[in-house]
Length: 155
Image (tube, rainbow, N blue to C red; front, side):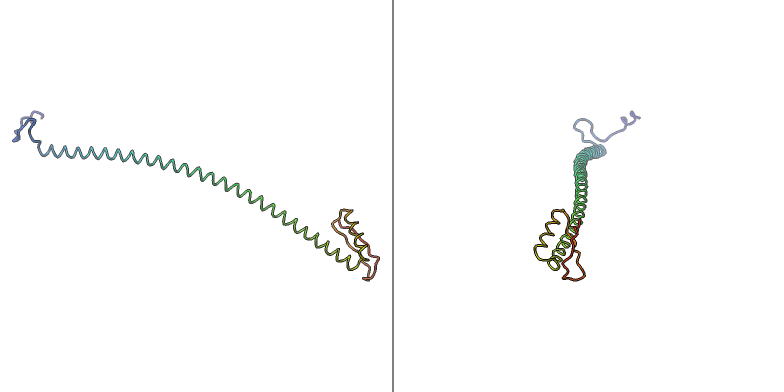
């Protein structure tokens, strides 16, 4: 078959100065375009690969920061829980202290109303302070004027 093509008559001149046929020109143009397209695709794939590597690096950084943020949030939650527990204990102690103060004010009021003067009030207060008690209870007689009231310390 190769001989047959060589034997075909051509109406074109042959040689180095001969003009190529339109088929050869078209083939060369399309082959060159295809080659350029392949090179462009290869460059685009490389560029895309570099961009994806950069994005992966950024995403790894974001993931590390999110993990760090989650750990910090866990520490904040633990600290807030500890603070809440301290606040509960403090609130309960405050209520207890308020009760002691109210009882003490009531005891002083009882001394002023039913005690036998300032000397007795001072003696009772000194007694309670020496015993380390929280206050005292004044036992009164049936009549407000009864001076035989006794004192009992509250522990």
